[in-house]
Image 1: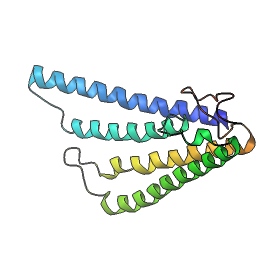
Image 2: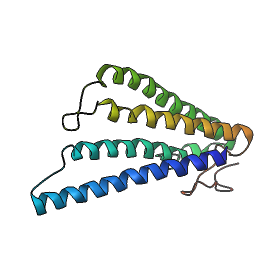
Image 3: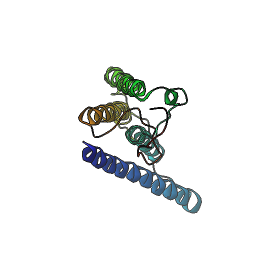
Length: 174
């Protein structure tokens, strides 16, 4: 399971990096065209926005998978380890449920508004809107992977985590 998660992280980080690289290249091209040739690329600003939205959605899911999302653990770290494990598992289930609801509601929203065209590129808005169920679906997958790893013993819930994602030994009460 951990290897699957590591491979998924690697692929998604690569996609996010490519999105940011494409944004960088397009912005530089737009600046050069605008100031050197008094020209522009039609639809480039919309494309930059779509790439940014996808990189944000995918990046948020990767941050969740790497345990680099926002956590407030001051109260939880004072609890016994067994209770912290239960709270961590409930937290993962709640995050998965919230993201699952986002997937469901965003699909309904996309069915309603996704066929409208973007002004410059004339692409359907669905092209940008699909980032929401994609990012939320990946977040659900990461939560389920963490829970599965805890069930089969590859990961300990209720542990304090370093920024690198490795468990700290001996932190908090036993």
